[in-house]
Length: 485
Image (cartoon, rainbow, N blue to C red; front, side):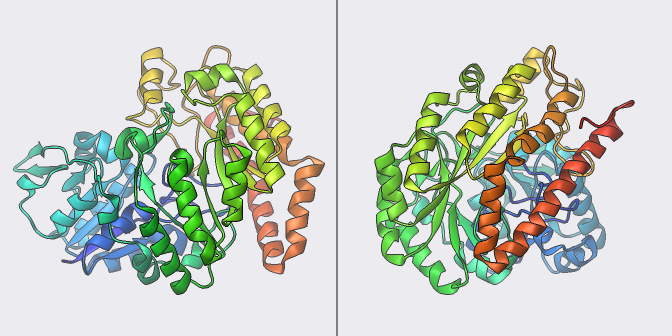
């Protein structure tokens, strides 16, 4: 078996491994691990995982490496599909016998359209594609591989669906793939210690958030998990092979969805003396937060989304602003850091609800924030709501990123244009960070360690440069546009 699992070169700063978050250019240098490719790569003997964006690898070097493989499997997404298709065509041009497959949420939801996007795409792995990739690479007849869509004699054939993996412990650890194929020092996330490693301990999420991509397309709404012993075993192994790592991040959509299991994993991690962080809903009680902290938890990544309860109900968030306030106070009291994420442009945003969300974020005063634009990915309930209600700003085209890689607003509502939503991201960031408390927090972290000082200086430069570039990007899209100071 000879297979290359590929995150291809893209626009500058593209984060192809962004997991359940949108794939786009970031405000500061940020790269998530390509875990969705690492997992099938761990299954396929003799394979290689090549993650080009964090390596800064261009198309020429990528093509040289790809020429040595019979199978190339590309993780694609709605924003990157056209770019990835061009890469596939270049691979085919140099070695026509190479068999190329596309996997990812976009391919899972729109397999026919993905196969038609380019003659270079031979097959698509639908839904949970780990064992689909394995069976293709084993050379099994395509007609018998569940979860596969492929081309044959000018026709597109869709095989039966593949059942979701029920026993997650059957999947091999990704640790050795990381060690063999990735340069872990190349992966940065602004709010995580560096170097860090991220991994999944389970898939699926019981929450019903209308905008969230992975539970609605690949993972499902049942949280299927690895056993606590399996997770702790891999963590102990990673500690041994990555002694330089300062933090481990559990990238499950909601690690705390199964609290008894989360507590058991924490209990087994405690003797290892590791620092770890995870995604969490803003609904935990102080006793749970403090217990996890005592077992090594440093940070929660929390999706607050909006400061308006009507919007939270429409997107089926399942948490109220008052619950969020209590959770945040408990984290502050327990000394657990929060990176909060917010989304502008959710149904039905208005100038008033945006202002409410900005003030809510400042009231919560978490360590750091990320402000995104609502991204109606195909396959999500948000996409269908937007289509049925006419919220798309372009009826015939729903690009989620600009050509320069910055996420763009694709939804607009009465009294709120997509341009206004886009501009409010800039105002949100400036309103939040240009206050004494956040500035002092950042300065304090800079003074603690020389490496952190250098890193924060770089991130600060990149952050304000990206805000400038966002404005320039919007200016090129709208005649007569002028800066909002």
